[in-house]
Image 1 (tube, one colour):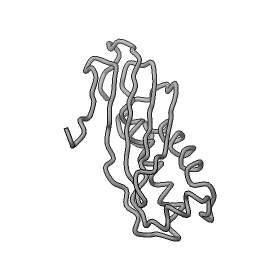
Image 2 (cartoon, one colour):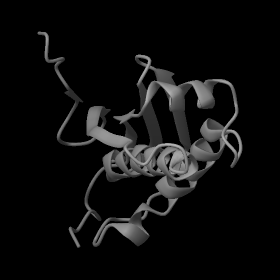
Image 3 (cartoon, one colour):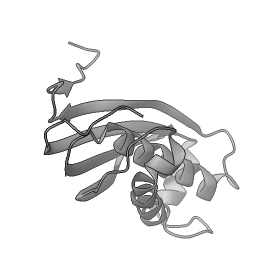
Image 4 (tube, one colour):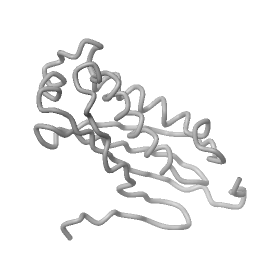
Length: 147
């Protein structure tokens, strides 16, 4: 494990995202709350938050941190895509990037799990860190591909 005992405690924020691509009919079922297993976004949101808190159990050598907040949102991007965005905040000596990436990954996996009975062709795409702040390495902001 990396020694973080000498690092300064600062406010750490990380935002990650991913895309879930599916058939338009599947997205309509989600929008109309007609997925047999229940409300897809509410179940996926809870799972994503829970997963972010378990990141050190999933990622070898990842430091456990005291997370102050996790916000997970689902946005309709097109008639076949949703975007999962997760923001993790902590006042810590190490970053929150892995927790944010874990949150969106698991959130997307739950969307897949809840909808797989109607659409096994769904895809989870573009899992990525969007931005982070705090810590010795400073800020990071992903540039859009159109810039």
